[in-house]
Image (cartoon, rainbow, N blue to C red; front, side, top):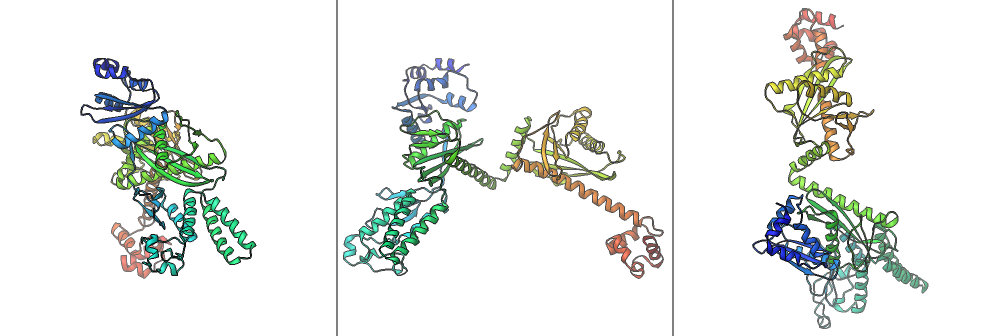
Length: 606
């Protein structure tokens, strides 16, 4: 049954939808219990709400939402911007089941300038609306610590919690503390610093916290030059030290161009379940605020919808009045007296790139945190990436990889390593001595091993892999395909891992005819495939060396008259190698196997 017909059977909802105004506003969907389950915004309320009921939705989540709607409420507003702000506030207030969830579980610290006669400056995680001024929150704690340290060095602000009212100071209720003696405070508690001078420092501190460090620096320089002109060199030197402190701080901030002032910058990254949004605020060319946050996606919202919501959230939280917002892509939204810019070059492009870099790093960090709490999450993510890259119908939980090893055809061996859930399963590794191939024929050797491996699994009704990797390019892939598909009639995807002239994994091949997959080197997925290839190569080489070593030992001792298996074992147990047996004296060898046998060994080995 189509949704249009469903709406027709529900006269109550039909009546609401058909009478909705064609104006900007927000709409609320309620379930049978009267609970708000979804809040949305629209330029045109009637058209937007009608779209939910007038077609069959591809998204299962949207179909479920529509089936739960029992009532519709709406609020008409003047502009789309008002609708966006109202939507954001209602989502935070009601936390509807089908809306994005702002994952703001961390309480980031802010810097508070207290509402007192002699204000204090300190970090806090509690916002108390008592007239105090707050700057932040700071998601990057070192940035907050750096600016607090700068303020401490520039201004002798009190750190005590005493009630420094004019009455208490006049009544001589206080005594100076250690901070005064070490020159960190000018003792306003006993009247040694006037309220006017103290508040002048507080005004400058507010400018620094707003990001206006350039104006403070210029004022300090001007006053310093004036004092020097009046030959007040000691006072000028003190101001010079402050000037250098603030200039050093400015040089460590992200300075672009002092022309860029009062600008907001946004960037967004998404994955299957979350959206990550970075916000930067620029004042006089430097970053005054930097914050990254996460939305939990519920209804397959687009990047555009999520970024719009993020812009509303950040501008309201930081009380931003920026007239320009830098964004990574075009948004279908308008805000009064605000220009949206998608920069192509220059300083603004640099700021956007910085925001993108920050949000990508935040996304990586969140994934790492999640993987520490749930180690299997990384494995599942990598397996899903392989599945998506290859377009295969099942998750590659069980992967097997083959490699050959021989030197000019001698002691030819092969190896198979097994990875389960993206982790090596060493108990399932297998070694193979090549039996039917004469000479150095890698293709024939590969076919023999693959044939033996999967014939046996089929006979014993064992577990077949979800994916086969070959250590080699197109040729190796084709000979494996001939055995798997043409001979054994199995449907197992085959991937080739080709190496460059430095013997490093360089290309990932898939399909017949094989094509190069665009898997970037350095990504976790590429590292996994590279690790599997390195592991099978290591396993094959180790087996080949062991076999070659044993054959060399056998050829040296097995043909000596009077030396059987027991005497050979005793000699190797005592001397560890044929080289050491050669170096041993006749008497030392005779002590193990007797004088007659010792003479035969010395003659044969020499």
